[in-house]
Length: 187
Image: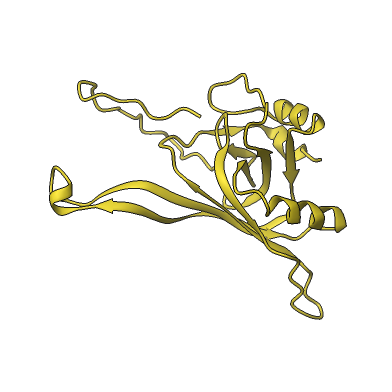
């Protein structure tokens, strides 16, 4: 994935004021995972298309999980420098950490077994999909440290679910790609 490149002699970016804001969606509804070092090819510079994901899913390079409820991304922390450690004496943030988390609610034995195996990886590449058909993660995905719990059964009348977290450090660029066909992806 691309990092932000800048130099001290460049002008500041001048973003246009959009007439309407982009609706990236309110919830994470699906995730895609790939082993570190996998061979997923993406032709666009911002991120993969649904067709490229479908090809990678069919080839076994990427796995796709849907049926996520309460999915969202939150900032969990950062490294802060302040005082004499910075030029201005103010506070500066580095290595911002984020988490994508939620609950897998559509599950069966295959989903359970798969998440038990994913939990054993210390590093995977991940993309997440929102309810407005946006995919975030850029061309190479976020380098995540996954955590999938066992099935939680809270009692009578409550459906079982598998909570998960995907922790990653921001790399400075957060590309989002929209494709209406993301809603049709499946393993």
